[in-house]
Image (cartoon, rainbow, N blue to C red; front, top):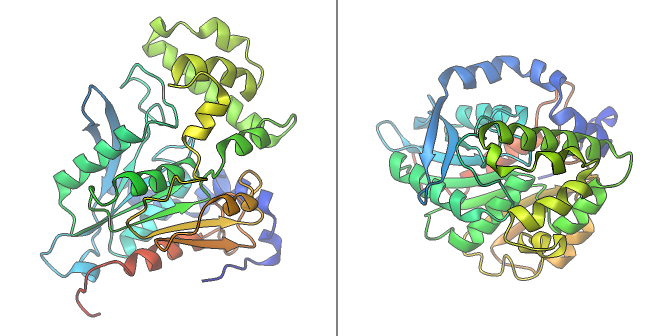
Amino acid sequence: MTFKPPFPLRSGHLQTILNGSSLRNKLAQAGIQRVNNSAQVQIIDCGEGVQLIGAYNRSSSAQKLTGAGKPSAMIILIHGWEGSFDSSYMLTATHTLLNAGYDVFRLNMRDHGPSLHLNQALFNATLTQEITRAIAAITEKYSPSSCFLAGYSLGGNFALRIAADSGVALNINAAMAICPPLDPAVTMTILEKPWSPYQFYFFKKWRNSLQSKLAYFPELNYGPTLNRCKNLADINRFFIPEHTPHSTPGAYFAAYALTGQCLSDLDIPALLVTSRDDPIIPAKDLALIPASEKLEIDLLSYGGHCGFLKNKRLESWVEGRMVNYFNQYLPPGPTT
């Protein structure tokens, strides 16, 4: 499949910025409202004292895929860093998937969205096991006829790592990642550039999140250090050795890189969608991922970071790609 937006939307920076903008939220408000009205917000017990939060939507069109009275197919969606299950792109994707007949569970990562109070330890990008246990709990509760996993940005990175490590054990039929960080050290270097709008955005979001966490767990006692931080690099210097299993930024970023042999054990089909004009994920890093018969890659000329907005209503091409991709891996169902 190809993606070629109209000329005014062929800027990677514009695609990136508009994807999470209030304008896109306003244009998609009717669909977003329908998703919110039917969502069931739930706390998920992930074991070992860990709790995550998520939102479940049941499709009223499920019989399109599986037939009346049969279990529905489900897609579990994971948001990006400092996003949440209420991010615009998560809500518009849910609306598209519900209309296509899929049930959707939007899973919130630790310390994202309304979950800062649930766990004392801070989120870090190596915590795939608790997401894996959450997926197991979700599928045990709903027993979907088929289960698919998809994620945006860091959520896509999680989706591919979980697919490689536990895809078969979790009975995931296929996985999809939209613009996942490939080499996180490279991405962080780009984000840390002085005067970058992305540095400003993520520094503000991350700092506010860490500050809010202290209201629930003041014993973490990093407030004075956080107040001295002026940029992402400052936060990483105290956060990584004190709140991750790794003592240096290099070791931490390497721990969740998709390069090298990370995806060598991929035993389920997976699709990685990214763009040449993504301003924070260099497409050249795809060369560091060994070829795999299970991994399909869509490298598109346009789309920015997780944008892929196809028209003046800022509707997403990649949501339709998700439907078409996962439809391939459904068991034979009713003809329509």
